[in-house]
Length: 122
Ligand code: FES
Image (cartoon, rainbow, N blue to C red; front, side, top):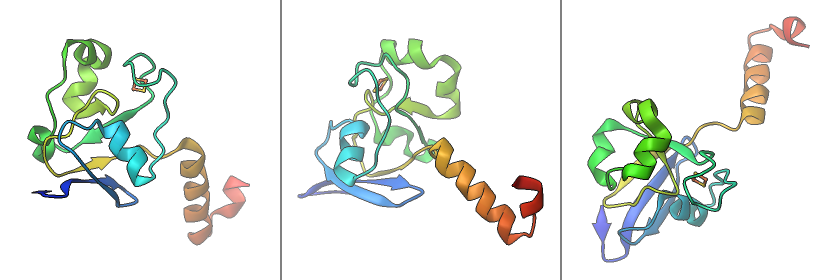
């Protein structure tokens, strides 16, 4: 929703939100929401570390990828992947942030522990 305050961007799975101006990049919106997206190139579409996924229903909520982003992402674009540093917000949307690999490993172990499979994992 675009209000007088701005556009709400929600980062999943943690459901952190930020309210930003139209044209703000998803990387800037993430920082404002307290979501850490890895970067190494400083937002120059070079490191490909800031990849996020945008649902097809939200495709029009962001500016289409420019030629540089298209070249960098290639077929990942068909999987709704975008570079957060290159993607400008147009309307309210949800953005899926990939899980940190360390967090994912811990989560898998905790899930296995709940299922009683700890012997196999430790
Ligand atoms: S921050 Fe490096 S590609 Fe986006």
